[in-house]
Amino acid sequence: MTDRLRRRACRSSGKIALATIIAAMLALPVHADDEAGPEDRARIAEALRAAGYESFEEVEFDDGVWEVDDAVGSDGREYDLELDPDTLEIIRIEED
Image (tube, rainbow, N blue to C red; front, side, top):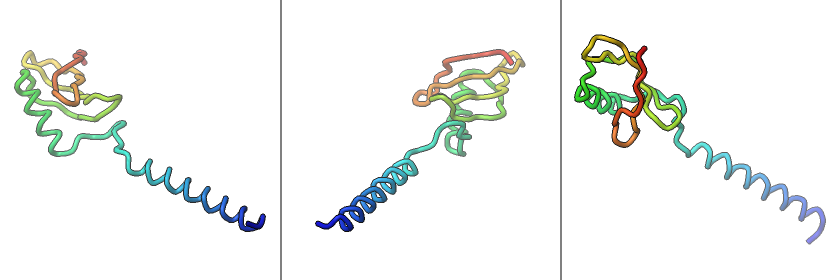
């Protein structure tokens, strides 16, 4: 193989590797600061009602948990909550 062909092959394989990495990154799900979609909001609302919360404002997925802002408890106070993404169990409660 001539030097010219080797350089061309190296450039091509480098481009293929870069394209593969980019494609893999684009295929990964993005969760950081993702707002909940309609299905997730409905599941979360159901779990919060069962736990005694009347309403909530914003829900987003961040740092591996669902974060619920301004959830109104049965005592009328507002809380920020963190929910386990699989079970929707409340794992942190902070009065707002």
